[in-house]
Length: 569
Image (cartoon, rainbow, N blue to C red; front, side):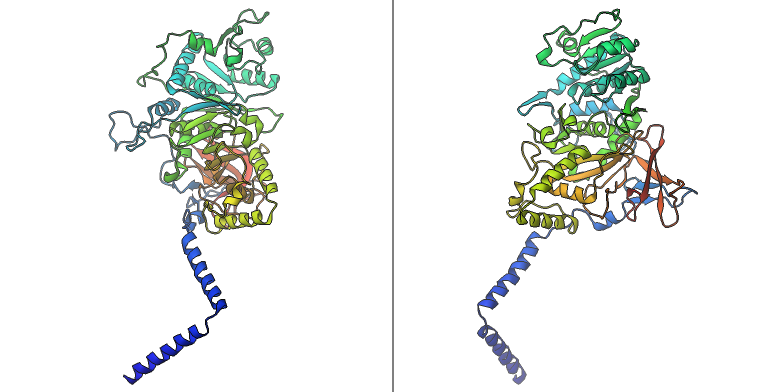
């Protein structure tokens, strides 16, 4: 008992002494200490992804050939497993355990009009398709109406002897409808880059052997083309409402009447009301023909013509759909805006993926030429955006110049630390609300944008985006950014950064992440860059289902970093 009494007496004296010395400074220090602990506990968030998944992003083959690096694949398509070939479409009555078909472009539109197939509250929900004109006018297009256009335009071109259809249009519903019409009616679609010089248009028509052109008045040099390209047999004008009263069916003098001219609107309106409502049946249809695109490496140079098969395109679409984590997949709640030309297969593949995922899709014909995200998104509030590096760099420059105050710069530093060190996107808070007024004006409802796709065009002189610039843009736009490497003979992307990869490095140009799940990458030795046991570098070669011809060299020199991501040397 004596020992216990001594302990209690000592404890009593200690407590009495502690509170006897308590003063205002002690209260302040104690309050600050409790406040710091409470703040750390309340704001602490787990990283969006495990750091180990970023440390080794691709899988290398166990052996390599002389003069080559190992073959690298996405962790989601490891060696020994087949590459992502298609959309795994299950036909009615098929067992849910059986492997589905890879599908083609026709299945993408069938899925768009059928709606969400998974069981749940969104079952049967379809996306919207709209056209943005100016700041106020947004036109909704019923999916049944687009289906009717696909059927009637496809049947009209086929009846007039059309076989190879050149699409010379800005981003529009008519471009997508013509592409699907070619798929359903077994014609070759040829997508031409829009707003090109007359001689370039004639050259592309000649090289692709097009016999039909779908285009808009004022942009297509009809007289010059007819004079210099006698193989043209058919022309379909897409006329806006303001010019629909004019006679666009007149053939210019001197052409000999060899070109059959019609307008899109007349083909639709002159057909019976009930015509074209049902898509051609799936049974007995041939595989769709190739889709031809043109790749311009640099302004003023001759375009490279590339033919993509149906298998190339659907494998690329599938790879893009499954590159996004399951919880963040594109769905009916998203509004997708391609602010880059649909003549680029990267933008086209992403747009087809959005349609297949039943997202709403908006088309803005001026978005491509503006290179200004504020202009491209007027009148709508996209959640997913495809933008050019030029447009993103302009947004970065304008937003950075607005961070002039000390408060704004420190808030940006805090959000950058959350992003790069803690691995989480900055959350909305009262403190960060001051920063909101400095954000770029993207969309009618700022804050809805959640994902931006952008791409480096290999060998085309695209402006470089460093990882620091991309990190800043994530904070400015409050959205994640996927940076891809694209090339002429690759449908979609060759490689792209991970959805949750927020890291910043001391680089002039960001890395390009891992290969997509439909392709694998290797590096072949060049006279100046050779692969060793410790370093993989050389010309980038890609092989896979999304590559025209199965394999292609990109003509640029790359390296595989320590985290197994692809980057320029």
